[in-house]
Amino acid sequence: MPPTKVKSAEVPIAPKRQHKADAKAATHAPPKPRPLTRIQREKQDIILEAALDVFSLHGFRGATIDQIAEVAGMSKPNLLYYFPRKEEIHRRLMGELLVTWLAPLREMDADGDPFPEIRSYIRRKLEMARDFPRESRLFANEMLQGAPRIIEMIEVDLKNLVDEKARVLLTWMDQGKLTRTDPYHLIFSIWATTQHYADFDVQVRAVLGPGRGGEGRFEDAARYLEQLFLFGLTPRPR
Amino acid sequence: MPPTKVKSAEVPIAPKRQHKADAKAATHAPPKPRPLTRIQREKQDIILEAALDVFSLHGFRGATIDQIAEVAGMSKPNLLYYFPRKEEIHRRLMGELLVTWLAPLREMDADGDPFPEIRSYIRRKLEMARDFPRESRLFANEMLQGAPRIIEMIEVDLKNLVDEKARVLLTWMDQGKLTRTDPYHLIFSIWATTQHYADFDVQVRAVLGPGRGGEGRFEDAARYLEQLFLFGLTPRPR
DNA sequence: AGAAATTTTGACCAGTTGGAAAAATGTTAG
DNA sequence: CTAACATTTTTCCAACTGGTCAAAATTTCT
Image 1 (cartoon, chains in turn purple, red, green, yellow):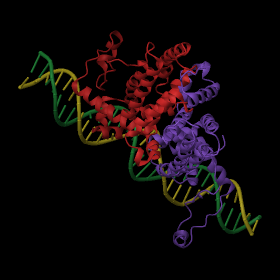
Image 2 (cartoon, helix red, strand yellow):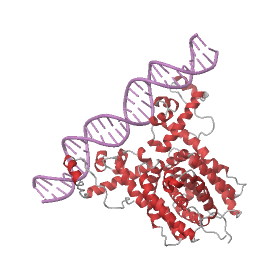
Image 3 (cartoon, chains in turn orange, yellow, cyan, purple):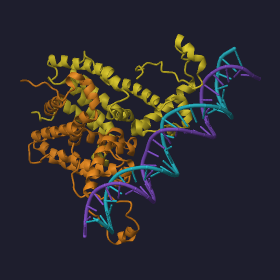
Image 4 (tube, helix red, strand yellow):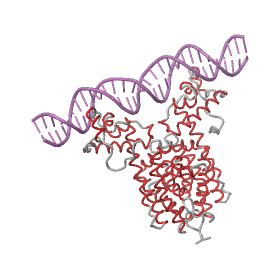
């Protein structure tokens, strides 16, 4: 799985050695952000990968640096050389996550027609649940804990995006192209139904049993959700 | 994993003092389960309450006995007197949880009509999300971690129940009372959409903003979901 | 190559963790 | 009232936690 790298210019690591000399200079000019070396980029990616594994499984508190270091195949102090605090790792992960996570919603096009747009939004979210379940769980874990480390992003970036798309949905409703209903809860229901397949994967598999719990479950889910969001459960005359 | 205890007779606490004398007797007769004292019942309840708080917020690994003890207003060793292991507390909680958690689905009546039944199932689940958010999060937390401590219950009790209700749904579909679709994913979608309001509460509130994030959100959600499950999003001629 | 910088390691630390043991204190049935 | 039991407190521990530090090993740059 490719690391969740999205942007390029990231906060440079701050090797501990960097001290006295900068102490004063920093107040005049921002500390020269020395470009990352090859090794730094590589190791950081390896660490973030490992951290995604561990954080998504145990949450922030339940994850340990030792564990992450082990998965990353390096010693704890070595890991701490790249990310001096546990929180740094988590912060980076969450920051990158939110960008990719919201991409599908961003793509929903006001100029398109509602059903193709909503349909492919659902598809994309479902694909993300299938292809990036750890990211989904990391996000869910943070939410369960009250989102202490990303509440701001939620209240600003996420909220703005949803507000914008809610307006788009309302426009469609005004045009009679979409049934009049609550656009926010509409979005929530898409999030909930799709992410469920990543976050509650064990349950889904266990309930479907060995027969239907295989890879086909995502296709089945897509078909079902399409039906649900289009027509609900009322039988239609044919 | 020990048998899924559900009934009233719970595993009695085993004070550490209980030793030699029982050692042999136990092989002949099951160790006399001495009824719980008043204090034992009370304290156990207090502990379970506190543990629900902490486990639901931090997950199993992230929660500490000290923390639970503090919330419960007692010392750690005192708490350990009632539940000699951290896992015991969690196990009890999960066991009791699953029973209450599945009650709404159990109530879905094969002899009723599909829409009233499904409708009130959704309502009940939504009420649970509103009234027992900690239970919902505890469950979600366990799921995210791969349900290591309850996988058996999921694979047996939960699966059987869902299988049964899926058959009920199929019957309704055969009778033309319900659109033909996947009954398992139908159930998943109800779980997902309702539990979302407990598990992702922070997000829901943040996105709805101070205006609409108040208590009314559950009523709005209920209305929206009813619409969704009944007719989907296609505008109906009127 | 050789100096300078970067990366890795090993030893270490103070605080926290789940839990044990035993002594001290309460409660209650006969 | 008192012996038997139930409860609570105090003290303790070994393993683990996030994190530090200086020295050693390696890479990079000239």
